[in-house]
Image 1 (cartoon, one colour):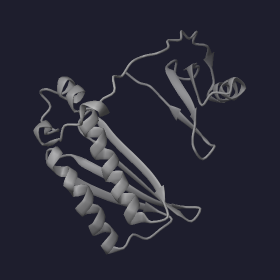
Image 2 (cartoon, rainbow, N blue to C red):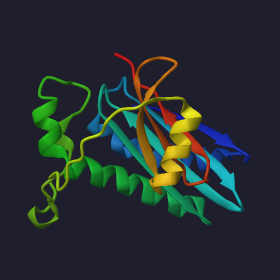
Image 3 (cartoon, one colour):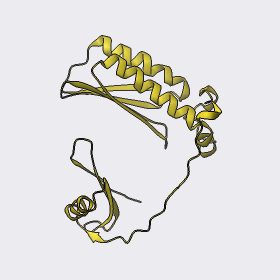
Image 4 (tube, rainbow, N blue to C red):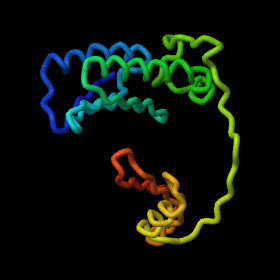
Length: 176
């Protein structure tokens, strides 16, 4: 697994880079060597934010942590990623039985009491209304939701707007 480290609003020391590569590198035994892990370190409001994303050819593992101690944050991000892999190991094996990107034999099994069955508890039917992104954001705010699905008038595709943690907005564009 190759690890790419980037930063925003802060300088990353060589020691910190080595720590990230060492700790995240332990997860490398779960993946083939051509998998890339992206780690982004950001300084926001005096706190460090660590984001790690591993794209294993169709399955994305992602963890994020905001902390005052970046080294402790790295430990928690690695722990979250490892936990994700363990919790979803069986489901991932079924989905990716021929995928050589993930080495399932190396992923530890999770205790039975930690397994939770994924289930849909509510279904809603939406009437997709053609609208612009601005109109979709306004509609989302009027409804008091954190996301809104709509038919984009520009591209005639189903898209999603969502409210981010920084109170700004994101747009998920679809394609096929």
